[in-house]
Amino acid sequence: MGLAALILVLLIGGFFIFQNYQKSRPLLSDIILNFDPEGPFATLIPRRDGNALVLNIKRVAAYDSFSYQLTYADKNGIDRGAGSLDTWIELKDKGEYEQELLLGTCSQGFTEGKEHCVFDEGVENGTLTLRIRKGLQPYRMLSQWHLQKPDLALGNLTSGDNHFSYKLANAKREDLSLIGFSVVNDLTGAPKLPGDKQILGKVYSLTSPIVRDLAEGSISLELSENPAAGAKLARYTDRANSWEELETKITGSKLEASASGSGIFTVLINKQ
Image (tube, rainbow, N blue to C red; front, side):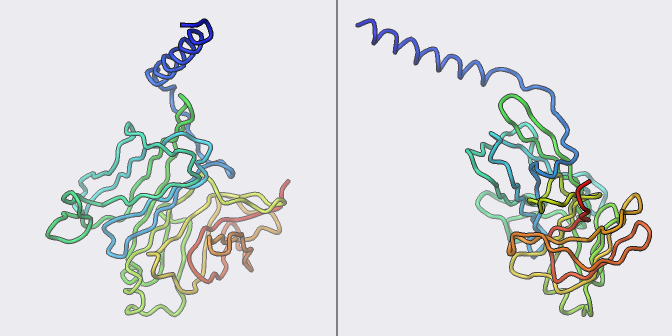
């Protein structure tokens, strides 16, 4: 074997040894991502029967893999969950990732139907924990979610912390029952903001089954402090791919506005 060939073999072998060494190294301690307006975030979309949530993780192209755990209590107060924070799913340079999470257990190959599945009843509130990894550094994100049937809530949809609500205008029970379910969850990041704006307070995602959007309604969002002059409630939709500032009424720390459907909501103020 020539010298050049020997050097090539040693380099290739060294590369694979280094790769295996990297994979065998333990991960660092998790860094908690409370909120980063330019960071990753996840929305939850309910299936119309309320027995599953579609997890949609966005802005993760810069990360290598993720794991998740969905936790909640059933109608008897028994803790349930789906997923494992130690099971990593490779992102492979994807900018976003989507996966259906069942609120129960099903036979292999089936995700619907009482003959193949046992679904947890009475699920309303829960927590979504995400671990997103870059190299050996994992980041942990927490999100509260609230699952509701609009007809039972009489059209008043709220977040888990009760600081955000969406009241459907002229809601009739028979119309609301067609929607099935809705989910409100708070976000750890946000879609790209206008260059001269920044976020005040939390960001909330309000979703309904993809086949059925919500009708026009009124929004209420309560902050922990009175906002500065010029603060506006704003709504983002994937369809428009932009933020829309809404005509906003401010009463102390409470902001109210009208909106024409589901989306991502927050309060925007001018950059300081």
